Image 1 (cartoon, rainbow, N blue to C red):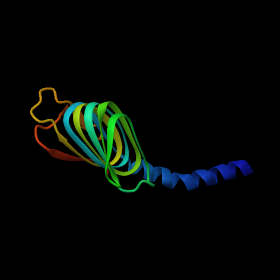
Image 2 (cartoon, rainbow, N blue to C red):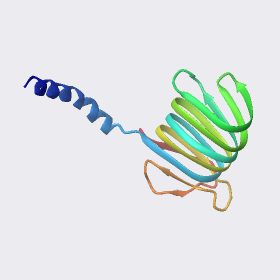
Image 3 (cartoon, rainbow, N blue to C red):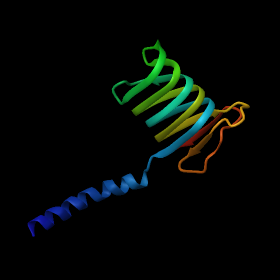
Image 4 (tube, helix red, strand yellow):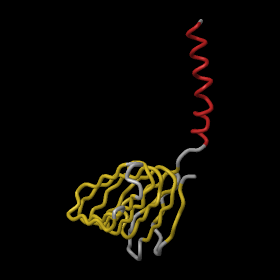
Length: 152
């Protein structure tokens, strides 16, 4: 009987937090095989790959998350909080925190979970890739710079 009461008390304490988490779900962003410009300014997680690109990451607070970039051929620190990577077959992970990811290149695929904005420009390239926001349908990249919000 004592175990049952303890279990019920724990469930009662956890229920409000679980309900709040369920009603304030993070948004999602998916980009598939894009060519052009992809800029993600988000608080959350971004994981992706680029076949050939210049990737610039601004991490204003290095203590609130982790940034990992693999496969780069050159790396330049533009400022204390901003680094640019150039290369082929690059993989990147921005794990938590508030970051800005700017990519110009081809074969860009990424997934993001959190809250933020994405700016896309496929230029006038045929088959310039697709994107989806908040589990919506995939659509082609815009032909000129356009910004979309996800999450929140």
